[in-house]
Image 1 (spheres, rainbow, N blue to C red):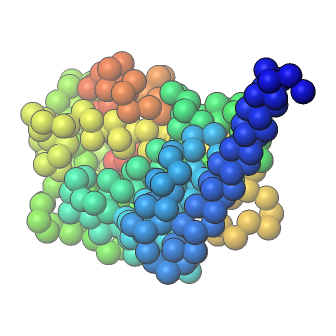
Image 2 (cartoon, helix red, strand yellow; image 1 turned 180 degrees about the horizontal axis):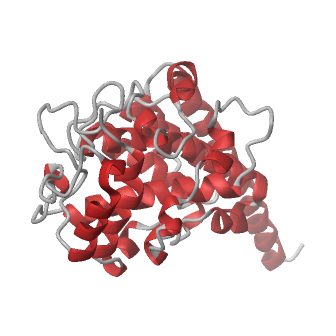
Length: 316
């Protein structure tokens, strides 16, 4: 065989050999990480995954990577299904309140490691494949319906836990999910301040439907969501995109009749789209943090919080 063709043959052979080795290494890393996760070794699982580099086109890798960060946050599907899923109340005025009663909901700030690590886990799945705009349709275009659905369902469980943290923290809820009733360390009756004329009119019009928040409490929001707070808009956008991504998955993924997800599967029929009913337009469909912060106005975010968070989380 001429020298040129011999070298070409060796190069091709080594190339195929290297690909097989890489795939094997990734699979081995995933298997090792999953074993470590069964031992609650969250950081060890992440170390195993990071050794082979971030695999943004490998759904099994991404699901394991998300599980490792969820593990760091204190979330586990064992606890979710064993202790929390049956607490979910599938009604417009009870759903978000019920999430605040989860065993993982107690949170002191949006900078808590338990909150930020779970956010990383969720974003790993929402933006799987390197997509820039989160949606079930976009994930399915890369991974196919089945794999995308598996990732989205996993993301939904985490989003429900994160919503529980968000409501517990910013709604000042007590152990039964009642808004404005915990009063430690804050005493707010509303999720956020209502600074625009349109939002203040909506608060007045809502009346007892959003109690204990009322037209006497325009400036009684949680400290992170108060007018003038450094990251107010960012934290309000987090609340919007959490709920909107939840709703997108809920209405575009089939849970099946044998799903062990408690009442989650029935939420699509029992939970009306309060935001869209209120006629708020784009803010009801925004699912990406950067786009929310750049394109959505404070007035629309305040109106969103009245229609979704204040209405769906009420007090004693």
